[in-house]
Length: 387
Image (cartoon, rainbow, N blue to C red; front, side, top):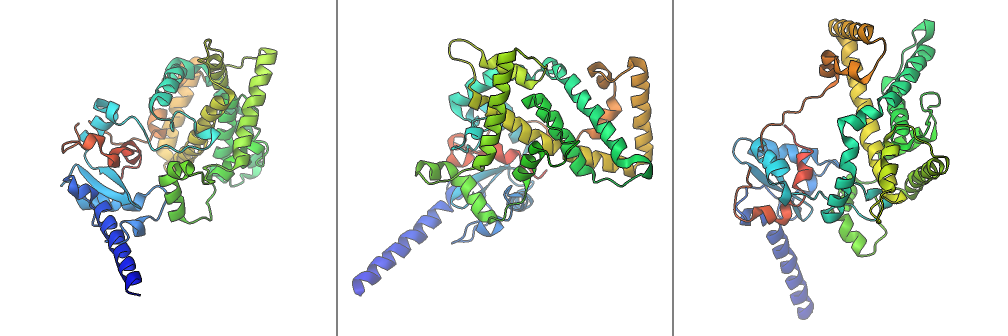
């Protein structure tokens, strides 16, 4: 009995000492940290996947008094940048020290430019950078305008003479799904005609609310690589979603290579990369990963932005009329909507652009912090800044 008491006491002492050491990570390095409950760290503040509550609390606590503050997601230390000049250092001046984002492995679709690290990321970035120049974006403009015409026709059909009230967010999501489906996959999605089209169903599935615990999802995202190394069956995307994107890309690649088809879209640019010699081209799986992130990053963000812009235009008739006047004048000069015509619409650009108060980026205060494990995912936290 005495032996068990000693063992349990020793074990408890070790656990408490370990937690105290882990939750002192930032203090030991001279960085202020959000007040940390002894046993739970910041566990109770993990109320959303994007950690906005925890980040906002940290920002409010140290705004104006520190350039950098520390928090803990479970036992992992993370840095919250509070100074705009320091942001510039991380993203530009000292980018070489902060290249990697948090990485989620274990799925074909995670091998994309936003998720890879080190030399894998550098090599893929070198291949993909030429596909995102303004000239290449102009290359796909005709595809976008074609879908925009279909959107106008859908509006006419849905509203008709009775002026039916529309749910715009869903309609905009169907529009952006069709645009990205054509540009990235070279596929006719037909979401505008059929709200239950396969691409639209997959988009809904990707962004639907999960019934799983928020804290479990945060834990999985935080320690996914470690769990995968242990051989545990963890994954980011459902196998059906992975199979869908790989199948669509594989079928598109096979058809275009067999029939020598070119459609002036993003898939054409990726196929050119696939054909590089000396084994430097992209595989079908790598192509699927790139078009997948293109789809995920584009359709929901763009549809939400369009929905908010249309909502604000409906509330502000004077702005709407001024915008209509500018568009009408430009189209009268050009005869149709072209890439060059769009560049002559500054008021349109101001209407739909969401401005973000970036300023100028600097050195991480304190010796040796640039190589600190807590700063490995620093670039991720900059994407969720509460400024």
